[in-house]
Image (cartoon, rainbow over all chains, first blue to last red; front, side):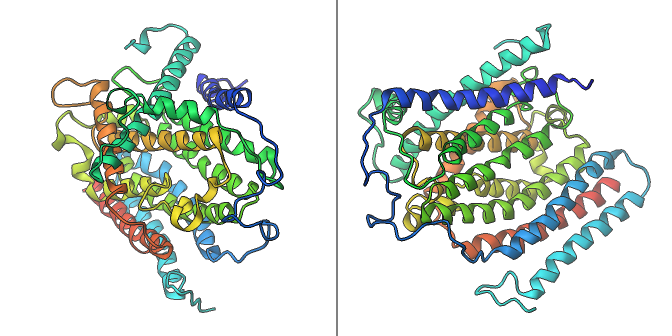
Length: 126
Length: 325
């Protein structure tokens, strides 16, 4: 059975966070006025009646950024355990390995730079 | 202040720490609202809130009462469960972020050897909450605000992570108390002297992650009304604000622990030095808000990808080299 006080603490803190946020909401339910009106419940759209639904497809211009993020974030997480052990390691081999890893990460940025992902207005060369 | 390490049962220790953190978060919300309005006022050459109490000191309480007494509206066609879950999801991880922070030499809730990772993991849950809030409120402004927020948080998450790596390379620890102890009480012994570039990148990323001006594009009031929280009234809006202030404090606390020596100070080390550093950084954040105009979205993304990521990668390489030499 895996048990640690850290897990208890995290669960307690998250639960307390929900409670701490929930109590003012409940107090608001009790104290606040409850008007009911058709117009009151309309989503705000600069005073006009909303045109259509907002749940539509729209072109996300930032798709490439999301891809880049996925590639980077996973790799950076690998660097964390390496960095923790690094000051206690011996020899120059770890240094060379870190250099290789970061160099390849840097190549990704250069690649997307050349592709034109970072230039606006967007001109991505396929 | 109680010496937390003398309490025998871990459960009692955790609960006492939890009560302390909740009190701190609540008080911090009140102090930050007051400070923000006063700083904004004085920078614009007006006194700020002045009517409620001496020098308007009771204004945040009046604001809180007003927010509780406002009607909570769920817009027509919105997804009510997600809509009301979003403020809770935004706020709850903020409390968990306080778990590994060492407030003083013996004032740490739980000593965790992965404290830094824990804070990074929980603070990035905020993006999910803002995404849910924007999507579920059936409002076009909210949806655009949420899309912007995701792109922005995702872009600044990486330099944030990368700028912390040199610190770990130098100290070889993820435990925030140990990182504090590797630094001395005097300013020239702090890690900011060895890592000025990492400090600047980290602090700018904190601005972007907490959606503070000049990076407040997800809630840009001149373009998107109020961005992702356009539809939230009363306490829903209040909770988003409280969460934002809590994340600001977590970010400034991390900056002062990792770079500015944490609770250690030249005269008498203790939690007062920690709070002094945190609130000094918070004041800088408020000062910046009224100094710089909002950036454009392509400038925001390109700053992260073209400058901060290459620079922080270089910083890692140089640090790794220096550690080995």
